[in-house]
Length: 251
Length: 84
Image (tube, rainbow over all chains, first blue to last red; front, side, top):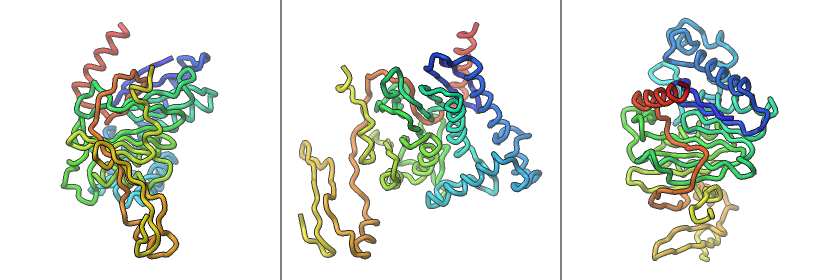
């Protein structure tokens, strides 16, 4: 069973292959994303984040979910040499960490409900579980210069894959150390991580590092990366090829 | 293999079509603090390639979030047509 909804300004797809999946199981996932949007959206005046940013809600008085995200944001800032920072111009924008975290939590909901083979894709950031009829899930890395093409095909089981980039909606990641300077040397960075929360936060941080990001990922245990630069050349980490499915390997 | 200033270094280099495609350190000095310090500064050499379109069918696509209004509009249209 596969369903798609537009939530949080992006297409979210949930597919569960297990035979006992029902509409209600998938609706629970979408309801969870809607609740996350209500709590964290910067575009909703009544969200807790908007209230914190207007000074109407103290961080200490916020919900456990908000406190968790603020703590994870701070932890990620420390782990990425400050390249990941949810605070800028004195305002909190947690979207860089909420998305991956929400996908991961939604996948946990499905696991706790007993589902084994499924994926959740929120705007190109993906958590897969189990297999697609016995085969690893096939995840394409979209060509940032031509969105109808994939430039790599990955074979993935029980991991997270996330891509950070400038390709389609323009610059939405910036370097907090030089906020006025756009990141022009790389256009797309895909990260394979132990889960989508980990993949997403390190994809965002490594992208903000520019060309150095791929070397940051190389040194991070349990992560692989594929970076595409403006000249359509790609650089990848030394363990990345393990996950690549080549055209000539498919009969 | 070479006896470098801080110990023995053994490197494996793969050359394809006259270009170095990978360099691997098989053995390098890491016992002395000084060497560990140097190693942590050196970037590994990572493989670089021209991107190439793949024809293999995929289940899911990973890419930067596409939230342009035009895209959302076309997706909304497609969804409402599919549900009509």
